[in-house]
Image 1 (cartoon, helix red, strand yellow):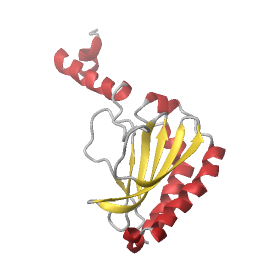
Image 2 (image 1 turned 90 degrees about the horizontal axis):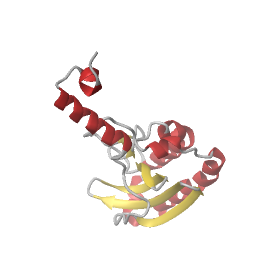
Image 3 (image 1 turned 60 degrees about the vertical axis):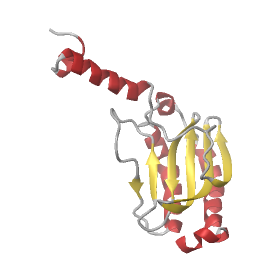
Image 4 (image 1 turned 135 degrees about the horizontal axis):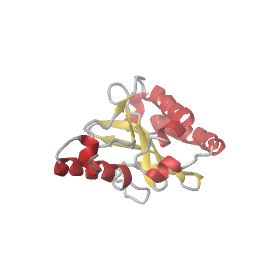
Length: 179
């Protein structure tokens, strides 16, 4: 019986080794995350940072980019930006998750079914409240996969995040047409 990558894939040894190295890089060292907590995100305006628990932070902000404008929310786990919800309104609202994939992907956005920025904010809060634990178990970063978010802490932080996102829609003249 053959050993190593060649036996596993039935491919020439060099090709199989390259595939395994690429897969392992994505699985254990290169996470393809969205960003870092200590990173300077220049497009993010009026940032509100909510420390949910040790290792879990929610950033609420708004931004205006060529692809869209509106309130947004990022979830940082173990210092990595794991999820971002861009509530940009009709045909532009979407979210990102740093999930495990064995190779690079071209599609990085999940579109909101909700049409208005207001409804997208509601959906973003729902996703964090109800599905964050599920998403964390599928994270690219092994430390994030092991991370345990305390639901009671999340439930205490989410109303503040949601109300700030809704305030942006009312306060920022640039965003008033998104409601």
